[in-house]
Image (cartoon, rainbow, N blue to C red; front, top):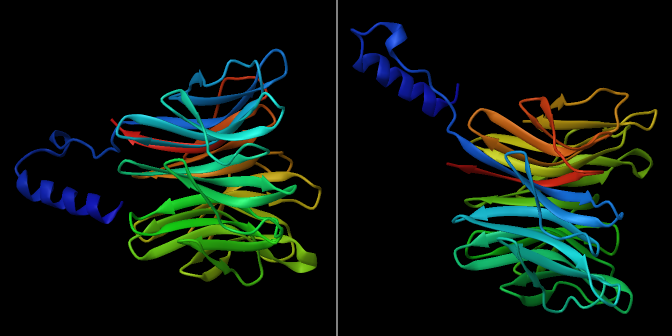
Length: 332
């Protein structure tokens, strides 16, 4: 039981000492709305940017051209989704949707994508990549103003973004294979890091999730707190860390473990302890994690399509050939 719930329970017991135990209502997590974002496939075979609210499917595009959705934030009753859509010239254009209305991002005319979104007050931040001379360039946008984080020769991608209202943190890859984060545009390469997938900021602490190099250059699921790396599995098997959440002193990381037979095991770690959501013969991946009280939500995909697990129990989401990549939990 979390400390705050324990304290509340003890106070309640002292206050109603003369009452019977059955008169004390049980402590419960608050009711929430669960938003999950991803992509489905239309009958004509095109990809459709999609999100689900409490399991009900909401399509952001009509299937007339390919579109994809990678991240979601709900702020002040507004729903923000980051992704990309196919433009008339056949290029993929970075975009976001606010309450279903699309905005194509500036500087994203050719082969670009928005992979992450963060909202702070009236400011909307997105991170992804644009293209220059055929090379991907890590990029972020603040209110549709473009900032390129590298030159057009290094081959870089931005996978996640977070802000504390003062600083902007972007994470990803530079030089095609170097785990990197940028703080207010200043680049830091992480030792032995292969990629960084996600970032969150809690006070003065910055947490990153990604992978470092293991034996034979296998990726090893790793998280960093203020630049200090913690490997979540041994170096012998391949694994990835795709998302991170922090609740008090507890650190949760969602990712995937690759088995010797080539299967993928959907997994999350709590304070370094692995909780496997699927078996060794499965083909499943996790993409995002969120915490609400004592409930742990993990989203991803399996052989049946888009799925989320609540406290380890799988809930399949509707939609053809669907995949899920992001989650937002909103208290009612």
